[in-house]
Image (cartoon, rainbow over all chains, first blue to last red; front, side):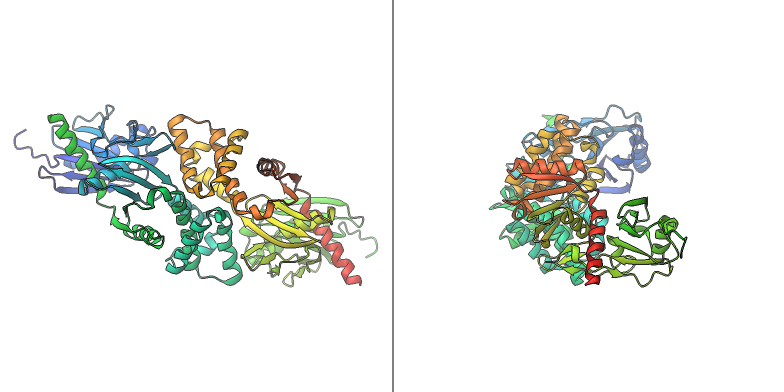
Length: 307
Length: 307
């Protein structure tokens, strides 16, 4: 072993449906290297996970087993090996990673962070629990609501380091489907959002959420009849869907401390929509949260195993 | 001319985005032949319409020009030749078909029924105005609401033979996108709907329409956690979307006479959803309405031109 310099003390892995990202972490906790590929869980068969991981991280491995801590859909039933959900309320930092027993390469010691579930109303998350752990690592005393906008936006009530409850809205996925594949695709373009039209659509939808089904085709009809600009039509679609989401999640954000962590543009959009309802929300960049969460969960595990 | 038996006295054409259907009508008004192809407006360039039509109807043509009356997206801006919308309120039977001046074959004399528009809230239809004319041909005194469920469901307030106002919901298109392409596709299957789960989802969504955004992902989560049957999940998705549509169209159906004309299964689904809200709706098969409407509009035009 002497002389054989293991490049990574451990390896952090963010493994979602469509992406695979890995970081080599040194003994000092610093990132030594990173790599990514599109070998997401969605395109891998059971026996494809180990080769996909080795493709990215092989250069970082020494002779002894290197700990790999992964999160995301890699732990789903259709993933590498199922890491069963832990029921909320739960402490993200204290989640016990599941050992992947089917990995064959002796240089790897892989564990997967389990997702969280909720019985009523039924809800699940995989990957976001790790982002939440990363958020709480920086703000351990946070008491309020963390919103993680994306394909499936999560609204998470946090208190005393625990996920108390959470709720998912499919807003991002619906926006993608409607803006790219429905009749609205001719109308909404692919560019920027008109800020006023966005604010108006959010407010209208929140004040009359029961009219949502009528609003959508109206966007198309107005453009057909009046030549409405694509940036206005796109803002109306986005505003109607985010407005509907805010209507459904009102108990989450009303009168709460709110942090929104997403891509900067999306976090800003949600923060603006909330601000217009009198709810002040802090916008954060979600990019660093997964790695921070994996590091925090690993550190907590190490502490636990020492006591 | 003598001896040359023109097979069709006139030709009726239903020309939508994805289909082209034609009927040869004899002097006695009976259907002599019919033909269809998938040469819908969506796949044709401007100069592709005439050949697509000739492909279907050439055998029915005599030497003199045969009148062809068409309806649907063929009259859209992206169609063969635009037949500009007529603003509601309007009498479907009295719509003046637009002559297609770009047709070159001397054996054809093509006209297109214009669609209807509404300024506020903005809305448009193309093709349904002809179905409505067909419905009113059979029930000229109908006073109430006609619902035409489909990709884009139309709710139409009819009185004294006129379309007073109308409203469109994209329910069918959203159901197709969500059930086939979203994360729900793993959960909702492609089979039948559980009737009880459907009724419950309609009722829940109507009583709390603001929760729609939360309901959808719940369908997936419940199936993941509890192994819910696909027929229940599918019924919940259908019920949530139809419930949201009924919430948005409540002013249309509450306390009105309602007729629902669609495919038998879909018309029945809507009639059941309405019945559960105490609104009694008659379900009709929409299949014969377009041809009946084209015949009725043609007869009305002939009368007008004789006076």
